[in-house]
Amino acid sequence: MVSTGASRKEKAAETEAALKQAAREVFAERGYLNTKITDITAAAGRATGSFYNHFAGKEEILEALLTDMLAEADEPVLDDPAHESDFSSRSSIRWHVAAFWRFYRAHLPELIALKQASMVDPALGRRLQQIMYADDAHLADHFNQLPGPIDPDLHLTSMNALLEGFAHTWLVTGHPSGRTLTDDEAIDHLTDLLHHGLAGKP
Amino acid sequence: MVSTGASRKEKAAETEAALKQAAREVFAERGYLNTKITDITAAAGRATGSFYNHFAGKEEILEALLTDMLAEADEPVLDDPAHESDFSSRSSIRWHVAAFWRFYRAHLPELIALKQASMVDPALGRRLQQIMYADDAHLADHFNQLPGPIDPDLHLTSMNALLEGFAHTWLVTGHPSGRTLTDDEAIDHLTDLLHHGLAGKP
DNA sequence: TGATTCACTGAATCCGGATTCACTATGAGC
DNA sequence: GCTCATAGTGAATCCGGATTCAGTGAATCA
Image 1 (cartoon, chains in turn cyan, orange, brown, red):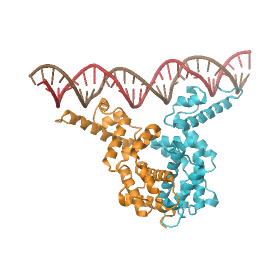
Image 2: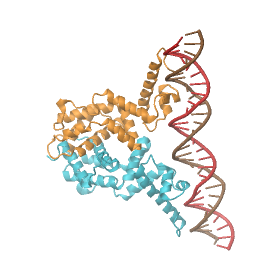
Image 3: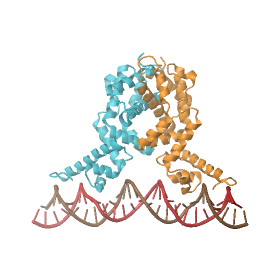
Image 4: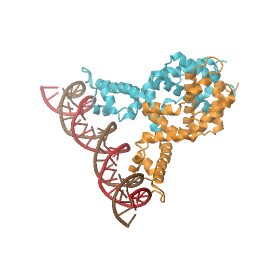
């Protein structure tokens, strides 16, 4: 089942890549907790035991996927260009929301898996989150630029809760009504809510 | 291990109650997915097999807990008295937030379990959510009273995401810093955010 | 009182899935 | 070409936990 005409290392790398890609697919399809090792190997077209030539277990392949994901992005979750470094204007809020939304959409499999794994094993979750949000501290600074008395801890957890929960509902589980959103609809809505609350544009 | 001097039905009811209470305790302590049937029976001081005299499995005891929870509350999640039936003023928003917060805090075990169960088994999740939020429709109506163009689906999922995610972080996993919040701090923060966005009180 | 039923009990059984490992095939080194 | 090292293979094994069930004793009923 392995393609031919490649060196040993090439083949090994190929298999590892196939396993990772297969893992992304099955994680997206049925979630992390519901996938068996054999689901991954089957999707990758390899034998069961082959998995263990590359990873110690499900946790490890998830870590590898998260590492890949972060390596691929310039900056972890919320990119932070100099020209959009605060939350005090609608456009800067929108910029952050859009960055989050695109990232979430592009990495559904990893983020679904991360969420499920964190849920079952809080210790693992903390470790993985630490990798993911290593630069939350940057964000906290930006909140300090907002007018009025601001509590960065509260604002940070609120934003995470809102963005992740909203994205999860619309991109992963799907809205009960079956309705779908365009990226712009979602981003605009979240931006408005963060900017001026339930009242919307003033 | 069963108390004496009771009729058969009384004893059975007593055992069932003990199992439910034990389930709440271990769900709160280690989560739904990580608890074994024997964890529940051990905590209840009963034998393993006793569990199956009352419930077909973990799913069923969770359903029973959710049913109890809802029966105990007058109205499901967000109570809705006539005098606070919209989201257009700060005080009405605060009222809803406070209702949610108290409910969440009072029913941590059930809500933790519900979240975990939903995560693994979307079909079960949908069924349970349907029980829980049967009256979401009421809320949607209230959003229509807000000024400006409002989209009830988006507002509803946003509020759920924000409130549940925030509550989960502070009441279940705990904030990474170890910091804790008083109920009023949490409720005020959420109210401000919903009312006027990141800018806080205008 | 004697017979019957019911809930409780916990050891035995069952089951799904993770992990291992003896074996095969092929590229690397000589 | 020959030997060694390595990745791949998948059936066998292992393991944790769910579920069962025959046995026990107390409440119910005649």
